[in-house]
Length: 319
Image (cartoon, rainbow, N blue to C red):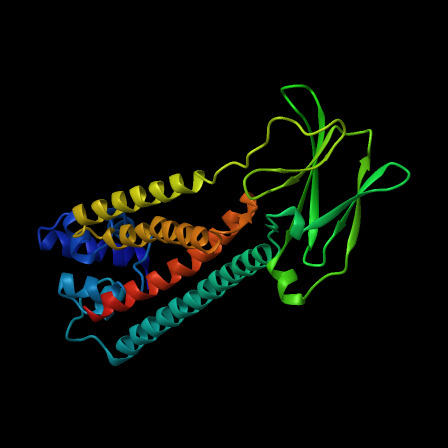
């Protein structure tokens, strides 16, 4: 097989039929750049394209590989030679497909495993301090928190009140899905600091705002409210808008060779939108770490995309 000779043959046959490269590309459902690469010998058609090229140009696949038409004196040896070439090309294409499938499977498996691991260890915050810890002040002036057995871990953050410059410490208690699967954990004592080191100690997150656990000189006359999760509403709207744009683009170019790619791309924002909605519904009554929301959304979106892509391919094969 000679890519330059085959390319010149394709060019001659195309011109015989008074077709431009663009017109031939539309018949074959490929880009005109692909046709140009074939004809200049810079590329060789895929094994899957050979039959459609041969049909469009009224030649046999063997003649296409040979780069010229067969004559009556074409010998049996030459016929066998081109048959062997065709089988060799087919084996090479199958081998390349297997390698690509293995690489894609490994990468997707690694991504899936990473997302599952992250999601299992994502903090799900215990919303009420009464269900998370007990606060005690020891005789030496230290304030300690006794974590309850349903708590997997904790986080501590320091900040200063902007209104009066008071020093504050905030503690959050959380559990994880992995912790829930493995069972309960023993109690843990956390030293929150000296009683005179902080003006206020809060627990995050409370049912209607952060809960005050300790106040040096009485309770403040203001509270701290947790932020609503409005950003995910914008994600849903953005995903729906992107899906609509992709579907409109597909409808406009549905007869183009790249229409199938656009349809597959449109499944990405659609899957992301559905995944976001399902995660929010599943976590509606839970305060969930915003960083880990995205891991759950990505994991679910990936699975939904695979499912939609499978359904789309089955539907197109049956049509």
